Each structure stands twice: as structure tokens, then as C-alpha cells.
Image (cartoon, rainbow, N blue to C red; front, side):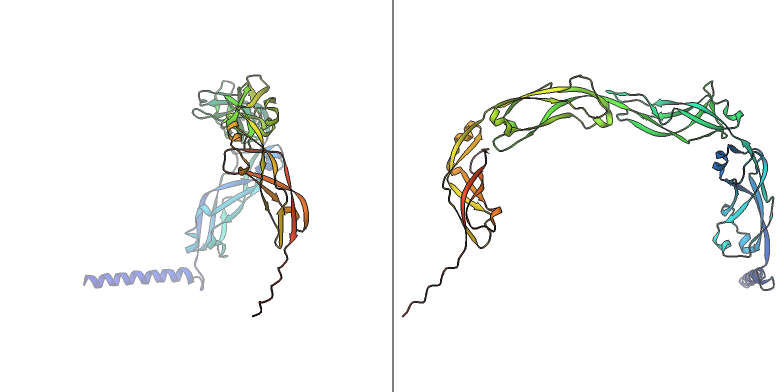
Length: 428
């Protein structure tokens, strides 16, 4: 019996809901029944305030409408579920050109898609049509900008002077609001143990002449933030070095050289000097030392940009020589050629070629003609036939680090390959 009663109750509820839905959707001569819904205290958004500023005016909160009430009419299922966060009421101030209390029209928009698609939803009433705006003449003052630095630099580093994107700031507002402002301040936090320069865009605070913070939303600076930069310096000892250009037989390991001074002390931006441990004075080709035996060279000391040379020395001197160097003339007898074009043959006519070798005394003494190979380079003779003097390269095999002095040439004959005539078959 209880189950049957419950069933009848459920059926009654469903029937009632269906009737209610039918009346709601079709009870108005076949259309949805219309109801009204009032939404109160909708915030008003004021636009084009920058236009007021350009005209020497400003909008005051006191005496200006902040909210509005709207009444909507439409189908129940729409207006009773209206999301107030999607209702936007704006007031455009671009046409306001004078100070004083005045009325400016309001504009209403709804971003809810189901309302945009339904033309039957209307606004039937507003608490007002024109918002009351209180506009005042804009006063301005220029105040000093100060910067407070918090945090510390690491040991061995030092901080320079803070630089600001601007040292003064124009503020605007009512006289009662901006007159107490003695200065503007930003706070630069460089963190703990800073090892590089710090640059940040910082919010602005205002203080009176007693160094008390002024917390007012009615002070309008011409910029919203100030860029503050604190350079962090480091003092480093940098080695003075030469970029040596090595070659076979002329190695850095065989050098005896001194650079005076060997180091200098510089101070500069920690970020720029972070990975800098030396200063390259210049390049030196070790082959140039063969003829001179010893050399003395002077170089300007060029420090990294933005750094200071604390040593005061602007030039460095290098004295250099080989520890052990010798040369000898060895007759090369092994001849080859390279880059021979297809369809041609070549013959190196030069049988012997005096070659000057150099290196350490021990390695030069070990060189014989068997260690030298002369290779004629035929790269530029692909279309040639006949006898030519061509460039040659000398390679060393089967021994230590040996260099070759000078340029060499050999004579080569180039000819076309001809097919040999076939011999007639032997008669039986």
C-alpha cells in the first residue's frame, strides 16, 4: 500500500512540473510567460579617464554613482537564472569637458550567450539613466623620487650607485591629496649575497615630510612604476695571455717566454666579469719566430667594456724564444702527384728536391730522405698537356713533430692516355 501511495505522489509531482513548465513556456498565448527580475548594486565601470587627464580634469569618487539597479523582463527560465557577473554597465567619459557634478548616460551589455540569442529579454527599469559624475580640476606637483636598497652583496663584491629611470615624478590629484606629498619612494630588494647587477621595475609609494607613508588612492602619478638599477662590481685579477698560432715543428710546449706584467687587477660589472679570467693581448704566429730566434713584442692592454684598470698599466711586453730549435736541408727523392684528371697520365721529372725542415735538434737529426714525400699538385692542370712546373707539398712520415720551411715546385709531364694497338692473332 505504501508503495502505491509513493507512486501516486511521484506521478502527481511529475504532472505538476509538466503543467508548470507548459504554463511557463506557452501560457502567454502560446509564448513563454514573462516575469520581471531586479538585479541590484551592479558596479559601474568608467571608461576614457585618460581623456579627462589630458584635459586637466579628474573623476572624484565622492559624489559619483558607483552602482545601479536594473530590472529585466523575459521568460522565467532566462531572467531568474541571470548571472550578475555577466552584466556590464559602463559610462564613457570622453565627452566630459568641464569640471562639476553632471550626468552622463549609462550603457548596459550582457555577455551571457543565451540572452544574446533571445530578443524577448528587455530592461524595463533602471534606478537612473544618467550616472552622476563629479569631475574636478586636476592639480599637479613634481616630487623627488628616492630609492631604498635592501639586501646585501656577497663578500668580494661592491655595490655602485643606484640609477633610476627618472629622479622626479609628476603627481596629479586634488590639492588636499597631493600637497602633503614630500617625495616618492621605491624599494629595491637585491636579495641575499648578490653577485650581479640588479634591475627591477618597482611600484611607487608616497611619503610626507615626516617620512610617513601616505596611503591614498586619489594620488595619480604620470607613470605607474620606476625602473631602478644597482650595479654590482667585482675586483678580479686577470691573467694576460697571448693567442699562439702553432704549426708542425713550432709548438707552445717548446717556448720560453715571459709576459710583463703577467696579470692586472680590474674592477667592473660582476655580470660582465663573471666568466672572464684573462685578457688576450693579441695573436702571435710561431712561424715568425723561426727567422728571428728570439723576439720582444709590446701589446696594448684592452680591458672589458665598462671596467676600470686598477693596476694603471696600459701596455704589456712579451719576450719569447724557442727552447730548442734547429733546421736542416734534406734531399727528398720520393715523388708523387695528386689530382690527376681522368684520361691522362703524368710523370714527375724532378728526381731530387732539397727541402728545409725544422724542429727540435733531436727530431731534425733523425730526418732522412726516406721520411719526406713530395706530392705534385695537378689541381689547376685538368685540361693541360705537356711539361709544367707545378706546386708541390711536402709531407713527413715515420718521425716526430717536424715542420717544413718554404714553398716548393717540381716539373711534371702530363699527357693523354692512348689505347695500345691490338696485336694480330698468331697464324697456326
